[in-house]
Length: 343
Image 1 (cartoon, one colour):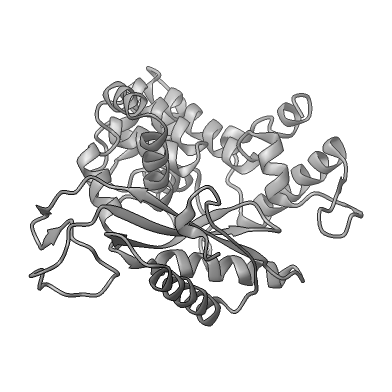
Image 2 (cartoon, one colour):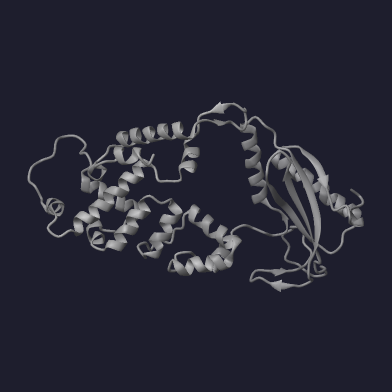
């Protein structure tokens, strides 16, 4: 590919491609990549097949050919605009007389420049920005970057005032902060506070209801996993595991209600006579023919009898079966604890 692309893209800085021409170039490049990487074995059927487009993208790890053409066009446009006595600059500033042919007008070279810059930053005038080499290079780089890296660069340059944060950018920030808050702070400082403040991340976490009881977000995610398995002709099989974790007895006010008392998910603001919770009983679903596990419910308790635990287990099993409609093949509990002897 390092020998093919330079030949194919020779002089592409001056091209004004139509959509059909961009599609033909993309198809041509994917054909070359399929010849380079060869076929692969399908994980479901066990037979050889050609690689899908997303698989080629993950293997190639470089911008596609149309993004590379756009980057080259922008780079050359900035160079030509900054050059003293540039013939290209004189032609762009010229306002020729005459009428264009009838029909939908084809995009001109400068129209493509405006369109590509607007896709990166809507409020930027390309002629003014092209005078500043570093800012223009950042725009050219963002043209070939994924959406997350593109958003970071634009926020770093203070070229966007939009409060909207894309899903990919939010996912990147949450994942980085989850693995290392120190690394998150370092990246945030290095990129001129382009990443959200940690308090913003905490607010994102609060958008999911984490109250005791059954977690609807987990059930919805499991239902999607079940549908995904059905589309592949398989049946999702899961096991239910449970365990107790000791908690420090403590009651505090979170700005809305008191927290720290025993709770099974019932919306009740009357805490008179309730005991402080000292244990959390957690239920988790583990996929037996896939690779994931997710907590589906937890209850704040202060000691339960065998019959009460049995009732909670039966309630959990019934709830999962009624909402997801897939079989549970295994039920496990900590065997080392005598309190779980009923199982």
